[in-house]
Length: 350
Ligand SMILES: [Zn+2]
Image (cartoon, rainbow, N blue to C red; front, side):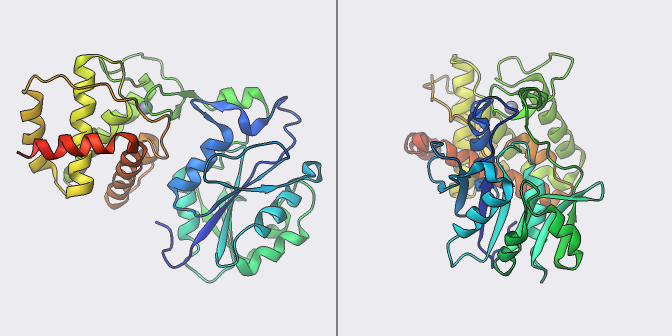
């Protein structure tokens, strides 16, 4: 969780020249999003507010993002960094720098760097294999460090020269940069349901009618195995199934429409009425045996959190918190249907 005392802005650097990429890199599609949208969703899912993006002339930012224009993108990453930091509103105490060409930066890494801000150093950075890298969190008193940054180096050289100012947070690996179309393809294949990227798995076994890629289905299997294998996860299991099902609506056919409707009702009962597994299961069983036909609801385009993020948890407490956040972000994404689902949820209680 983000340090609740310190509001932190996201500064996404997306004004690179796309020289090696060939076309506008921030607008390149990755699943159903663009690279820039993927990083914006990560920023939102991490609780960063406001989200600022440094962009070249002519590039529109996603809704709700504050644009900061870099009219000389050839001046390099450091120039973008200064423009982005200058756009952080005066009342915000810190900024987390993200790169617009790292769409697979893990939520877990961002959370770890934000948590690292709970000490008195001015800078927090991720460290993998002994090397510092993004995301970098700067407290406001460290914003001026960007003045010494040169060319495309960003803050790297400065952080190496001033280890005393930096809290290094060890992470498993640095997110890969996307410089070329080949880099983009190497990130994996998007799941047709949740849009998360996975390396393809060999077997093509997936659920009979749930709309997940085999690799995503395998990731869900790992999460379930964790929950079945340890009693500390038991209470969360029902909610995990609700969120995963809702993110993978599959095809518009009777069984699948019912499944999505019943699990959306389950999410509503949990998040808005605090109902747990023991209360939810009999409601779902009753509705499922009712034989009704449920309408198809157009699903959201994409989600801030997916089963991938839950898989990254290392303790039962972290797992529980991530499932809760995954559920909240998913429920929020279904907002156009909230009114209808709330009515179903209320009728289901009588
Ligand atoms: Zn999926």
